[in-house]
Structure formats: C-alpha cells, structure tokens
Length: 134
Image (cartoon, rainbow, N blue to C red):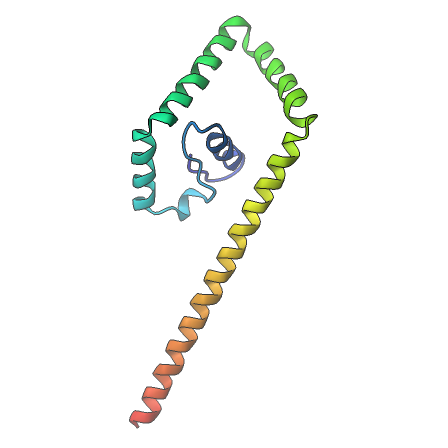
C-alpha cells in the first residue's frame, strides 16, 4: 500500500497491522522505484502474507454473504467499538502510530541537519582551497 493522501495512510497502517501486505508510512512520491519493486517482490514471495490475505478474504466473503453490505458494516463497526475502542487497544494503536510518526520526523530532522553540515563543510573546503590557491 503506497499512500498518496487522505485515508490511504490509515489503509496502509491496517494492511501492515493485519500482515496482509506492506503498508508504506511515506507517500508514494517519496518512494523510489527500486524500493517499491523490492517491496512488491518480497510481499509477492512471502507465504505468510499470502496465507493471512487469504484468511482475511475468506472472512470478508463469508461475512458479506451472511448479511447485506450495510448490515455487515454496522456489525463490523459495533465489533470494532466493543473489541478495540472500549478495550483500550485503539489508544495503544494511536500511541504506536504517534511514536512511529515522531521517530520518522526525528530521523528526517537528523538527515536534514547532516546534509546541511556536509554541504557547509564542502563549501568551507572549497573556499579554503580557492583562497590558498590564489
């Protein structure tokens, strides 16, 4: 799952959490073709992911055949509310998401700082070389 905007980030999180694929935390525009190709290949070859995806698909098919679409959605929301929100698991998921987001921002900050230091160092070396040569 390669999110671009909106709820696609949530969908990527769910794909990752269910283990039915790989959900990127970064938007598609920031993912290299090489990374995307490697990820697709590894997901395609992973038997655990295939097994989990088949189980989820089977569960979805059986629940949609048992009742109409709207009824199935209402049941799923009620189940999610009872089993995830009230139990506190939802808050744990939100906490995990916030931590992951904070870690990503911190890594990005470090990378930007490191790049600026390298650029500044290169500029200083260039200026010194120019001054010493003249």
